[in-house]
Image 1 (cartoon, rainbow, N blue to C red):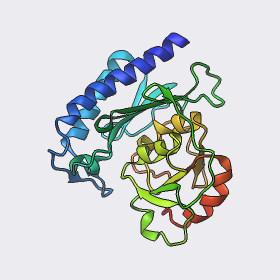
Image 2: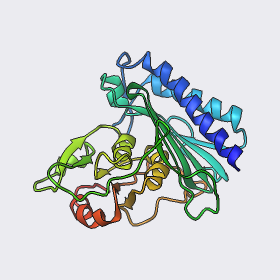
Image 3: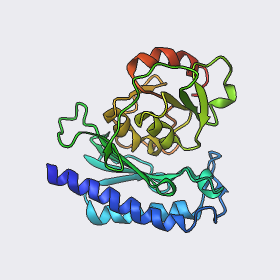
Image 4: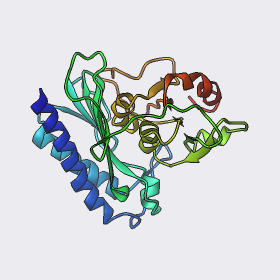
Length: 270
């Protein structure tokens, strides 16, 4: 199965690299429009989505595809790519250099591989996490091919925690860490995986916001806390995930769950 995972990794690297290079030409040059849920979309999002879906169909013709700008219904395929062609559209449109392309590969409804490429930063994260799927293969989480891991530190005034724009509206002191807002759901959680922050919360992420980062966070040693009553994975065949939110807390290690969950549970809008 090693050849399969090499092919998956090579495809993710090549495809996100090509699309990312082309998106850089549009960076800060396009006008966004507002979708029904209040989020922004540009022609670049739609173009990148088509490019990635076509690339997947060419290399993995038997795999399903679920994407933000395409089909949002999970077809129940054994293997399925979940695509966010441009995570951080507001940053992209407003010339803030934190945005990326996120791919998650699902096996029987659960993500087992994730790849997130951030062209303006020159950063590519990826990770393998098989859980109880019965699969095996490469292990670990990586940034630019260097192994990464979450922090083992305890909170202090010199550590960081990231909020999203929706959750920060209800924030109140005191809080055990310095606060940051990065504006990109995937990058928020990747900073936990990379040991930069101790935690992060997202109030309204969609499935494509978390599909690519879930395996990376888990492989890096992070703890994923679902702030809802039902588990996210495995996905349900036939269900439309276009409008579903998955409020989520990610922390660097399990001991921090008891520190941060009581604080952010009140902040997240279900």
